[in-house]
Length: 198
Image: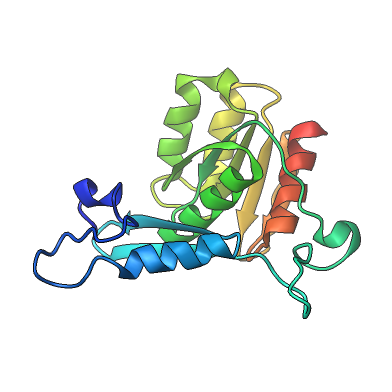
């Protein structure tokens, strides 16, 4: 992993945490290239598994102009928004990608890696959240169990369930949709906007 003291300076030119090794230009060059292409790069430590770097870049047409994500019309339209979203996702890389995409869309996001942590965060301030996104399969407490616990705290809470395995979920009035994995920015943005504004 990357030491916490180094994380804030990671993309600075000539910064290196390994004195005498390297130039400190590698990640600065990556950052510069990504930003020049109107992209986003982010780093996060993965407990016991090193670090992950997420790079998001816009899709370009043959002439170099930006295309709407996913194609034309509403299918690929990216919908920005505002609001506070609580996320439960146990896979660190998926959690990082999801929080990065939601933040880029304009949302304030807090994410946790298990259902119990999500429920605890929700109970601390139940009126704070405009939407909760839960992975159906999480450790400690599943997404479905977390869903029921959250719904018991605040009637009318809006929840999106997500999974890489489509399963029949019992209908619940608070469930505003099912977000199948993998998802792209356009699909995510549309479902989140619909869930919050419906």
